[in-house]
Length: 128
Image 1 (spheres, rainbow, N blue to C red):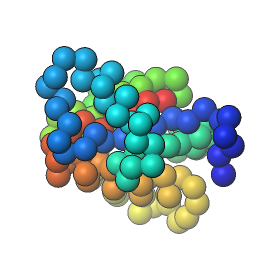
Image 2: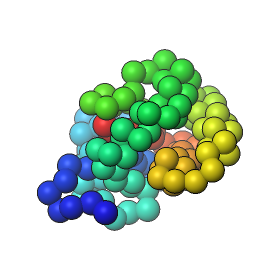
Image 3: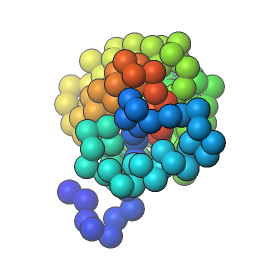
Image 4: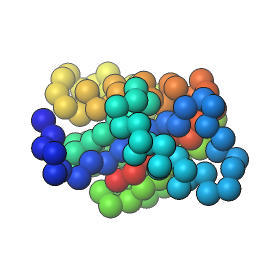
């Protein structure tokens, strides 16, 4: 459980009606997320959660598919439809190899968000 003063690391997808072509869209997306932290499109992770993901293969998988450097202290986005599909397929396969635990829970939530990003053609923002 997260304490009230604990810094949170959001993974989110803006709603379908959010214009990601507008000027300063990233700043506006962050503002939307901050105003809608309980929205189903927002997953708030603790620092421990980020380290759990980093210890497993999930961040490596994402980085390989998006040519990124996602990790603790590093943000990234999953933008193109092709990248989203590749990440979804690989993370889906990877999560099946995990028997249980927090990593599996986080990845299932991230896959749900990635599915929304694919369906709505929106960016998946990962802000570590």
